[in-house]
Length: 573
Image (cartoon, rainbow, N blue to C red):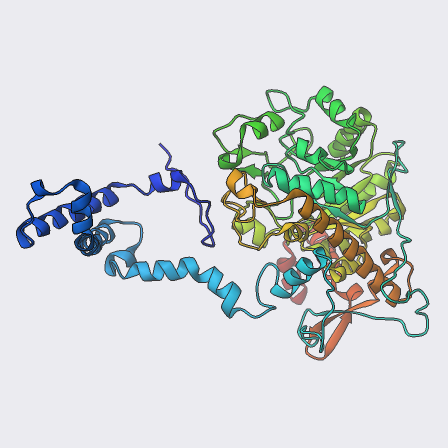
């Protein structure tokens, strides 16, 4: 029988519960307690010469309390020594019994000590303290201005700098005022009811199950206040998504949660039912996710409640895994057929979410879209390999897929090169949380952005890195009701709305400083990046160019039946 899975927690935040206490009552604890009690009684009888029949149990406990503590300490060391010498999982623990527990404590406390005491404001990952504090203050409506100068090292490689206009800067408003000229329409070319967005920031896909009811309810209520869209995630439509009345994007994952039959196939009747929901404005077919491309989503059994089981139409008591791929298609032609089918049922805009690896795939999507007008996706979400998730294999989360910047630039050029850029709306997704992140994504070709972790920080996330353990201390990424109670829906919703408004205002401020009406007009030549000390390059020169050149080289090498390296080595001969 498989051993019970143990989570590799990264901090010391755990939900207090009786079950945790019971799990700690193993054979070593029982032996320790028995030995300590026997040693205490022996000491009382032989050394203190106590007549046990003359005292009640409570009197004996009071009389021998200090002796029991000493016995417990001594016996505890002995039992731990025996445990450490006999266990076989950790060699160093057998060499240094008892002492090793000091190291274990430091390892456990390490993330907290580093986060709050030792790391500087720019060192933490995935989000630095500067970024987190900016989000916290912006969400609370606190004036997020700084004094004395920036803490950002403008000579550091990777630093992004926007180029303000001097004489053409006629768009900037006085004080805190900014313009609101942004407008993007989705679904103009496929005969469906179009959707108009007047805010370029939207809440990215996070499922009910990965996040708590209260977290989603607050996100939805905040989205309604801010006038932005809320993606349901692949876990289907839940009551928490209806809480605030915000417009929804229903995501269709590979498991078809909420719209599947008993075999896991797409059920058109259930799909049509979701399309008739007044809040659902668009549908999104998830091909892959930036944090785990090539792997389906997963929801740990610890997070599957009865409600989630009914919503997703999955059993309780075991982990829920989504397939790595949609069974309905395995190429672009099949994808377009599936999009057509979904759109014929829902009568609303249908998009896709994908991760870019080899650029030939997005180029084929663009080529097919040109050849078959009126078909294909109404929008495309380009999810960068630097995106986040509740639970993913480290190897995929850290090393697979193009990062957001390169991926968006590649996608933008793929459609521009086919002359159909105006026929598709591109969303950028992947570690976007500040106005400069939004400006960079839109300069590289995105029409709008998705954000997830930024909004989680706005809810109150402290970056405890416990999303995968069901022990999130802020009540956001958990189904533990005792932890979830910490999150006040109405207060959190106001923070979400305020954060979205600040993102709009300050990204618009950057656009106006360049002399533009809205961020969509920012070009990659309006932003420069430090590529080496004292040297800057335009954004247009960096992201996308290297990936596109690599794509051309790979295509040529494949024609020759070689790898790119082999082709280049042959050229030297």
